Image 1 (cartoon, protein in one colour):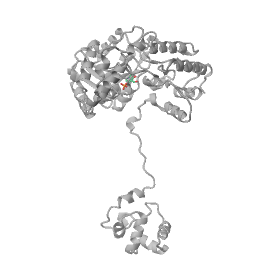
Image 2 (image 1 turned 90 degrees about the vertical axis):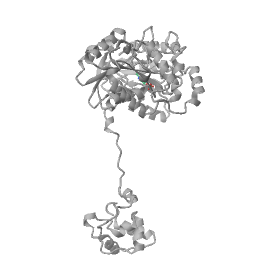
Image 3 (image 1 turned 60 degrees about the vertical axis):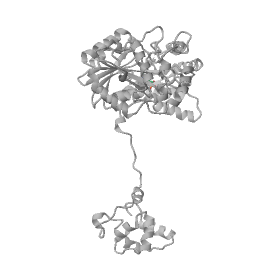
Image 4 (image 1 turned 180 degrees about the horizontal axis):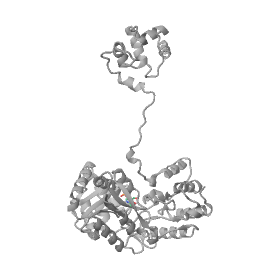
Length: 493
Ligand SMILES: Cc1ncc(COP(=O)(O)O)c(C=O)c1O
């Protein structure tokens, strides 16, 4: 009874309600074990206490095993009693593996925006690179072909993916000059996201270091951390069009460094790396025997005549993993299809490949209907080109946002050359900004504009934020006017 926090008076009251009067002394006798209740009384008490009657009669419900005079073979309490006994349910905490994991693109400021929306506020969302909700349409042919193939996509596919999808990815890789690619080293995934996680799990042991850019697309840092690895951030240099700072990169290599990651074209900066920079990175990887991971999901969204060069094409002697997909180029982020291609020196990564195969098999396969349209999507007319040339929505919106931001006193920005993100710098002295999350919240509360703070991209200073310039021009104009107005008076307190 004491374990359940039930007093004798409670039992007396309950039994009275059930039609049986029990005296106080009678109860004390039962509790002390001096008297054993009659069968009918015992049944009543067992019902009230939610315990098994045989257990109640065989032992002493209130005393520990050692002190019980009659409990040599006391049976286990009835399971329902165990549940009833605990007065408060234990709490379930998230795994400590998540302690250092950050994914602010959908973080606390977004939660606050959702709360405000629930209260009926209209929020201008400049925070997520999801083209479809902003009116970017999937090419009709892609949808038509998926519809037609749907009846054939009911079963699991080969865990790496359908032959037709991998063949198309193979041909695409050949066009991009990736050396030594074999069909069995091409893997489709539920977006690049799944494959980032899979490859980090396959590679990293606890404490292994991996070089990741700052700013980064934060999933890389998050997945490396979750896999037990230790992400080490190298700087991308705003003064040099946000290209990786090779000196900084090399200075951060230790004996524990296994690999380096580049995101090219880059999210959040929109930078496209020239061949010389890529060659410099390859040299570093070669000198220090590092694996190269290249996230190239925006490779078909380069503007202003910038040519995308796959770093793997420059590193035939090194182990390289190149990632791409259709979420951005074909506006089908919701279909979930991405891929990863292992190229270059296969021999030195044979054991890693076994790990990749194991993890790929464990998740059975990626979304088969989405795989079925890879061939259609990668071949023929690329409708994305209409968006990124002069007159196209992405191109014109980029120009507008870039110019409007540069006109704001205290804001400066490097022109993005690809993707649909821009990463402006704030004069923290002028605005007295010490906390970029507070800045994001202040902007949200005052202007109902949702952006992502620079810290969300593992950028150490509180002086940047990212805008996604996918919304239509009218919305962008309104947002940029509001932003200018905000920075006109903002001082963080
Ligand atoms: C650089 C980068 N890599 C990967 C992804 C994830 O793409 P997917 O939709 O293929 O999972 C994103 C999404 O925004 C991204 O920006």
